Amino acid sequence: RNEIPVLIDCDFKAAPGKITAILGQSGSGKSTLLHLLGTLDAPDQGEIFFDGVRTDNLPRRQRDRFRNDKLGMIFQFYHLLPEISALQNVLMPLMIQQSWWSYLGNRQSNIQRAKELMQRVGLEHRMHHKPRELSGGEMQRAAIARALIAQPELLLADEPTGNLDRKTGDQILSLIRELNQQDGLTIVMVTHDESIARSCDHIIRLRDGRIEAA
Image 1: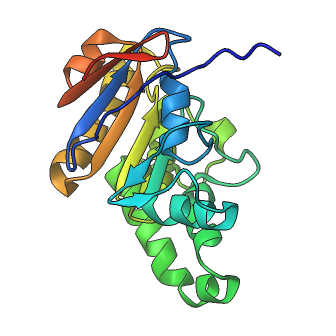
Image 2: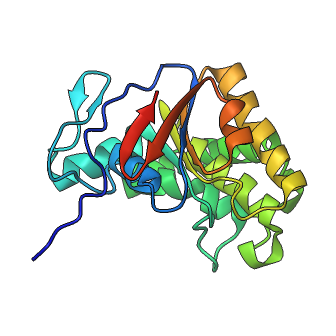
């Protein structure tokens, strides 16, 4: 069968403590690249390193543990669980990361941290609402708090404003920049918007699966 490569000869480094934009049009391979960085997919060829540790060839269980411990992820369509509250969604990574008994033992401190994060992202007044009761901007704020709850070293954002109007999108971008500036959080963000990319520290341009400039 014929195989079409999605990414070809992609070689780059994300600078620690900076915001790196992966800029490209639909079909350029930028979301695939982000999924590879997030260990959601594995490359057929090549290597991926995080702080000196190779991640692309980790066994599944270790890969899942790495993702839960080291990474936070924000998606264009939020990926919130619809049947539970915003607060419970924010807590979900800790439920996955910790053993059940450990989570129960730390329940009050976990909830307190989640509430503090929801206050930080401006969602303290909506924490007990379910996703269907939230606006798009509020759902993305909840998703950002969820991505931060386990104190990740790297935040990956896949078109975080792509499903929002311009005003709300600008507010979300301001929040992401604030997190970077105040916490020194390393962020890699996929976008098709040139103006968003220009607001980042570094730009990686993708076209047809190849890096044009970095």
